[in-house]
Image (cartoon, rainbow, N blue to C red):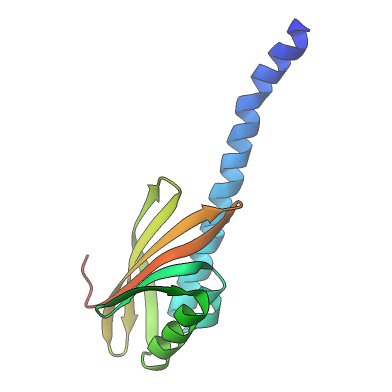
Length: 137
């Protein structure tokens, strides 16, 4: 009995570490997918990571809207801009997710982009997206 308990106590931290590593790898994949979508003008790829309700602020207009409304707004924004490159300038952990800030360089100028991703059912979903004129780094 003591031997079984000792084995469990020794393996538990290892299992937790492996799970955290897997989630970290998944976040890197999501970050890479979002960076690729922003750089290559693919709003549908961004929309694949949206939560059901999203706080959206694009060029000053702020609101909490549904996933489908957010998709329409992102498609409209990207129909009027020609992205060149998205660079991540800052990334940090939040209580229930992660924040990503970066600069979206377009032919029309630079935009400051902020994404807040929330972990739900071991997946990352965009809970908040903010796109503002000018790089505010």
